[in-house]
Length: 193
Image 1 (tube, rainbow, N blue to C red):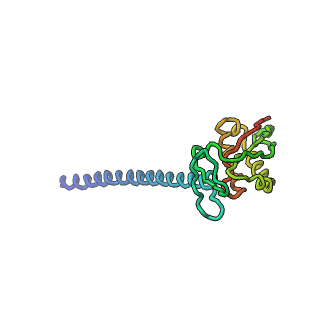
Image 2 (image 1 turned 135 degrees about the vertical axis):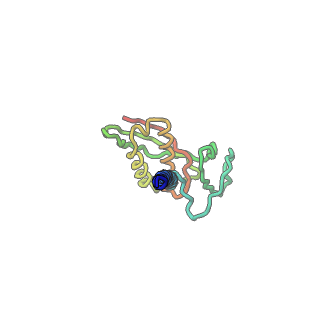
Image 3 (image 1 turned 90 degrees about the vertical axis):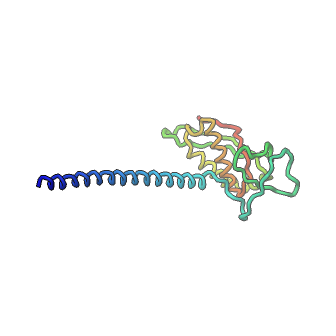
């Protein structure tokens, strides 16, 4: 009878030892699944940010824009090209006319609300769009004022902030014009008071 008692206590120890690894493996699986889910959500958020804020809208008509080779020569007369530029290095050195925009004076979105940005700009376009800019003056002023009023002093004071602001202004103007006609934005006056 002494032999039967050890048999019943030995299986109890083995059952506890067998249950412990199963619990650890469930926790490990949950952690791995959460990490994978976090990666998927981050990728989706990054894609959404690119889609809504960074992409250049396609030209009207649904057709793909023909790529333009970065050459020093001008485009042939009578042909209007509308390149889709993905990187600044894809831009030709000199594309077209430089046209002035009206001066903007905007309150910045600072907590104290005491900073004002006075901004003068000119835009370089790949086509003669002076009449289009004049026809859309109210829409352009509204878009640029809305963009600038959402910026804080910290966002516009650094060189990186100014580069980003130029890109955002060009993207807004291209959305209004319906095609990527604005190639570069130049700040001719940039005063924060």
